[in-house]
Length: 138
Image (cartoon, rainbow, N blue to C red; front, side, top):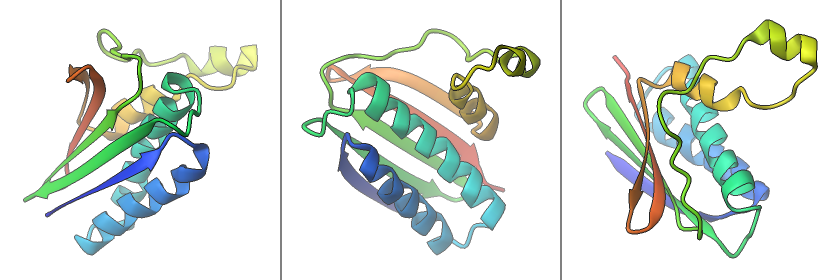
């Protein structure tokens, strides 16, 4: 089972992405907890691409591909913007106490994505940044 969607890089499209992922997983009869976790992870990555990589430029777009094969879910988010974002290494787990004491906002999203998904990879394809997320749903 697979499906895809293309959106412009506007925050207004985040709800469409959440609805798309939720609908795909519910059609596959997945439980609500797992659905909500995956929706959160995809929302975080897409928001990062929209806000940080593309500066909310609605002339840019993202492609999302969802593939469910057996119990394995693979998600690709491809950024067609002009910049490459290829984070190096594993995402560090932030110190929550330090964040609270410092009153920091933000910076927790990719750590959360890494905890939810089994695998998170960024790579380049045809001069575009691609984020690949995977999770065993068993």
